[in-house]
Image 1 (cartoon, one colour):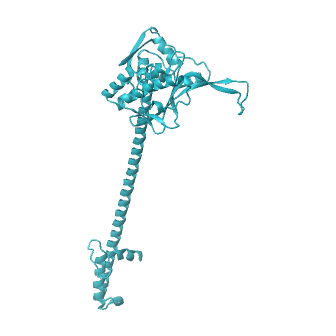
Image 2: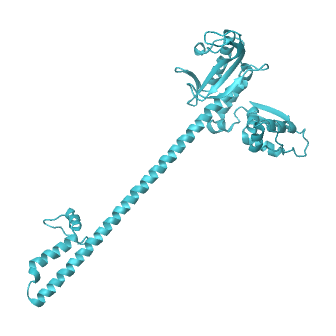
Length: 352
């Protein structure tokens, strides 16, 4: 269920400075942080982005030298197929053990025995007749392995793996070489494409016309059958990377919606408080005018008591009417009126 890797400190240093830390981590199937910790423990310096920038432009940048320790120290570390943090994040221990079990026992047979139902529907238009059987035997083993871990193979209408509700597309094809014929055909081409016998397997980020995320190509030493475990693991990893990304997007949308709702709540609270304040000011204005009316009526009464006459035609009935209107306007007294209602208060103020 675990794999053992052993190399010298010098060998690891050379790999990290000729490849990249992430590629070396992928090669040994360990997480990036874990490999970085191993380098720190054994005092193996790491290149920075400036180093890679110069190297990629054809320069020969200077390396940070390996500190004085025994460069032949053997570094041994163990990993399981599901050591990646993605597996730990999305799968429990039992599920990870199942993947490890399938991974460790995954092999490609020599015969196509009891093939998967969808094998006969695989698109082999880019594979020569000579290599079709080999391609199908490889895919049959891969299909069955994916189903053993709870995944599925779908064909709706394009074929893809379904793992953790994530669609992972794939394509198998054969590399073709351009052979110059010396004669031009009716399209003006002086060459033909000949199959090379080299199979390639692409893992895509979706089921239809998708972007190729990983490509595995046969070499003189290794066929697709020899690297089927690595391909199997990469299919699962891509599914969980997409799942992780989908969850990140969903979380970002949730936070955005939460922020929007928060802004809406703030807006409503602001509007409510503004209306309450306007109401307060309106009531204060009503109270002030009611008090002004009472003071005015009192002045009229004083004048009437002195002159014994009704100034400006003001009578005792008018005084009673004016006091009643003051009590109607006053929000504290808030008396009702036989003719006017509360809606008329605003009209009164608009007219003033």
